[in-house]
Image 1 (spheres, helix red, strand yellow):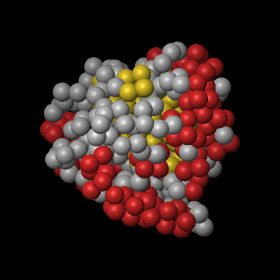
Image 2: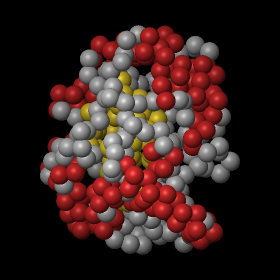
Image 3: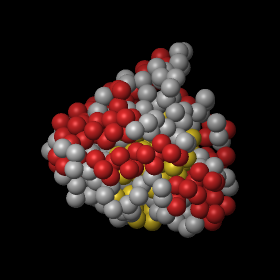
Image 4: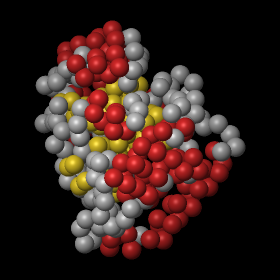
Length: 322
């Protein structure tokens, strides 16, 4: 399990000034999309698993205390639990964490990181024995869970060397093995970063194809003004660029990692804006996972008493309790 992932700001102040008009245009497009989807159901395939009938699932990465301590702090049990695993060295199916999640009524969000893995080796079958073992174990569970392989491929992670063709081929190879072995309970999450790293092809170039993806997703953070060239971004701002592109796929969307820093604005107000934004602007977002840890920035929900109170309000909102 690798919990030491480096996180870098997605947007700079100078870039924000240059692209201000583009951002406004993107937000306008998002609102237009929201208004059209409000009158008719999203094109979500009925066979897609774990989609709430209404509202959105609340998820959590527990990096700031035990599950029991954090749930008491939140005032409820989140529906989704995010954990990280190494592709080759960890058992990312039969882990004690996932076993406890199933027993505790949580849905595992299994984030698999291909550290030091050449995607050519995945494509050419070097890991097929391992993948068949993982697929058989997944199918034997008989329960649905999220599987998020090689997230943020368009960002600084650069899985597969920022090569969309290899990324897609590797994804499809893994997916096909799981399907062939009968592990149809796996809910496949494809999750790029909210902005593309310099030199990386745009996120949608890495899309494996509709038949290979159940949920699309986005990872995105508000870094505040913790650096002189950073700008404060609202929850809406963070996902304005990529949401319309994912929404065009008509699949449920998960915010698989998000959080806000305290510097430069009101973190409490940022959190208070999540549910209204989901309702009116981002209706296809069906799950939001908070990265609760003091790491790179003060992402933890206890960074201030006002932030914690706002998170409790969000967690108790009926929209986040479908």
